[in-house]
Structure formats: structure tokens, C-alpha cells
Amino acid sequence: MLSVKAAVARSKGGPFSVEDVLLGQPRADEVLVRLVATGLCHTDLLARDQILPPGLPAVLGHEGSGVVQAVGEAVTTLAPGDPVVLAPMSCGSCRPCLTGHPMHCVSFLPLNLRGRRADGSTAYRDAAGAGISGHFFGQSSFADHVVAHQRSVVKVRADAPLELLGPLGCGLQTGAGAVLGVFAAPPGSSLVVFGAGPVGLAAVMAARIAGCTRIIAVDLHRGRLDLALELGATDVLDGGQDAVAAAVVELSGGGVDFALDAVGLPRTARAAVESLTTGGTAGIVGSAGTGQDLSVGLVQMLGRTVKGILQGDSVPALLIPRLLDFFMAGRFPLDKLIRPYPLADINQAVADATGGTTVKPLLLHHAEG
Image (cartoon, rainbow, N blue to C red; front, side, top):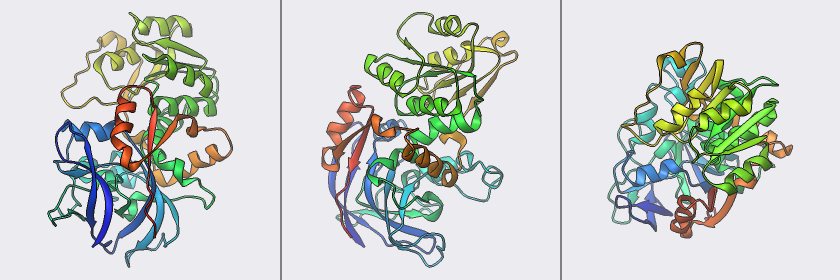
């Protein structure tokens, strides 16, 4: 087994502990990846707080980018030295997977949140040899090296700046995939985004690429609203005001074509629906955890569509390289969202993210070989 540094969540709501973890060798259909950088996502904190599984202790993290170190004998599309971005796991054989919707895989939750491989095993053990939860979203990238199934590993172009790209595998593909794929927002259309965090700002950038002429961002933090304007929003609104949906309708001249809730609270999801014009579509991509109910008037649903969207309903092997090409062309400036931290400073990164001073913390790894 390989000894690697990892940030381990050991207690509900407690700090991450950076320690030595033992990592097994890749199986026939797996890949060993040396991590360069990993984004910190709100979902990692939901798992740390045990609002979501897996059980603790666990190596979390699911926005990793790095370099392939070794591949199993059944892997034919990847080789040592390949630059890669990691993405969630899918089964590859269910109806959604076979019809181009792997992020809506019927086994998505057990494959990505159980903390184990599909057969119940784990490649992760603590220094004493006891098994710990891993394989989080197909990776557990709060570690210097990971073992991931080949379906979770996306090869990217050779000149890719890997130190920036981890968030493409989750938050950024979620927001951008909703706009470019699920909505397929046409030029001249209008969009409101509730929540100007990484997911919402990715949606703003994607809307500008799509040619939306009115892009409204709603948030509680003035700094994030200013960033939204820099990234392409035409208008911003304070999310703390009363009747924010009515303000969107007035600002857009009768309601928007598309609304994206990147927060995941009942009030923001309802506001997304209430912001629509007739014929509009609302997408719910945020989640504050289970037990949240949405109440919407039936009349408000007439002529409107509401979709729950997981991971942008993307095919990561297609969308991630596409977003990278947009970034390299200066059209998807994801670097404006990012602040780097050493892995050892993960708890400071958490504090800055939850305090709203950092939009997207990026943990830098320094493992070699």
C-alpha cells in the first residue's frame, strides 16, 4: 500500500485532520492519480457534518485534478503521465448512463456517497490499518494520491493548468451544464441565478457564452454580486430583500426564460419558479440536505417546467474538455473564483468559504512521483 497525506474528517462538524493514510493499488479497472489541486465544495462540508453520508472517519474531496501514475490492466484509454480531471462515478449500464445522462445514474447515490466501492471494499486505511470511508464521488481527493475507477477520470489537453481545474469536475460543470445543456439557453434569452457561489457564477459565465442578453444574479454578499457583474451578469439583486422574485419579474419585464437555484433552500427554489415567464424553466441544482420541501402554487406551474438537475446532467468526458477550451480562450475565467491554500491549511479554507470571504478554495498538493 502507498502512504499518502490526506485530510480526514473524523468527527461530526469537527476540524479536518491532516495525517498519513494508506492507499491500496489500483484494480484492473482503476487508475492511480497524483493530485495537483482539489476544490473545496459545500457538499464536502455536508458530509463532514453528517447531513450526507458516508460515515466517519472519511477522506472526502471530489474536485480533484492531477496526473495519472499507474493504470490497471483493463484500462485502455488512459496512461501514466496523462493530465486528468476527476468526476463523479456512474455505473455505465443503467438507462440514464446508456442514454447519455451518467450524472443521473440510478446508482449515483450509493456509488458516490457510500464511502466504498460498488463491492463494498475500500482502498483507504488509516495508519493503523483500519478501513476508512473513501471513494467519495469516485475519488476522495483530499489526499495526495487517489485510486479512482476509470469512469471517473477525464483526460484533458496537455497544456491544461492542472492547478486550477479541479472544480470543473463538480461545481463548475454543475452550473455550466445546466445552462449549456439542460436549458440549452438560446441567444437573446434571459436567466436569473439564485446564489453567486461557484455553481451560480459558472452559470453566469455559461450564460454569457450562450448569448443570453439578460443575466441576473441574486446573492446576500455584495462582493459576490460584484464578481458576478465582472463575469457577465447584466443585473444583480440583494437576496435578502422582500419579494425578490417580484423584483426579478419587474427587472426582466415579465419574468425570465430560465431560473437556476444554486442554493437549495425551499425559499430560493420557490423564488426561482416565481421568477419565470410563461413557458420558462427552473432548474434546482443546490441542496441543503434532506428534509427540505418545496411548496409552489399550482397556477404558477401552468406553462412552466421545474427540473431537478444533478451535476449539470453532463457527460463529464465531453463537458469538462469543452469548458477547459472556453477557459483557455478567455471565455470561462474560472480563475477569478479561486483562492489557493496548501492542503495543510484546509481548516482555514473551510472558515474562509463558510464566512463568505473566499468563493472557491483550492487545496494544493505537493506530493511527487
